[in-house]
Amino acid sequence: MTPDEHRTMRESLGDYAIGRLPDGEAAAVRAHLDGCAACRAELAKVSSVLPALGGVDPKHLDRTPVPPADLGERIVAAARAERRPAPRRRLPTSVAAAAAAVAIVVGGVAGYAVGDYDGIPREPVAVQASAPEIRASAVAIPHTWGMEIVLDADGFRPGATYRVVVEATDGREVDAGAFIGTGAAPMVCNLNSSVLRPDASGFKVLDTAGSTVLRGDLTPA
Ligand SMILES: [Zn+2]
Image (cartoon, rainbow, N blue to C red):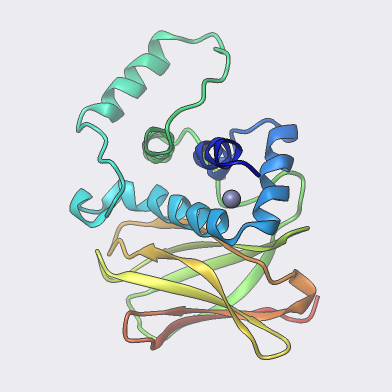
């Protein structure tokens, strides 16, 4: 892959994370993610920012350009003004992420965390939190390149960074990305790991000290 192709791939991740890519392009992105740990990490970062944009101080969104304060209003106004479907335009990642966060706020993507995703059924995962303030549910989505976990939660310490690892049946713990806690504000995180669903036995959410604050158990597939 040339640096140019790689950059194009990066630009698609925002749309990919919010499910806006047409099937063909989404398949190409998935195929690339399969072989590229850097882009998987980037996708995890993009995904973790989606919910954070809704409720976290922009100062915590390191290295992510902060969208203008009135962007949400402008997007909603533009959406109201323009009822007919427009050709899909590739947005910079941060704008696509902000648009997704706004859509969640206005209820435009109700059902974002439930049902099928690309026609792949979601498997509920039993989760257990170590602290009473953390309320969470999770689903696992088996992909050809690995397993995605969609974590729907609140109660994680606002602004704190959490790391997620998938536990493999052979004892490995494989990085699945990170997210920023949003306190009482609900968040939805898409976490991706290269562990295939049949090889996964669970996942853990770790705080910065490395302590497990949430675990999910995956029964053998
Ligand atoms: Zn890549």
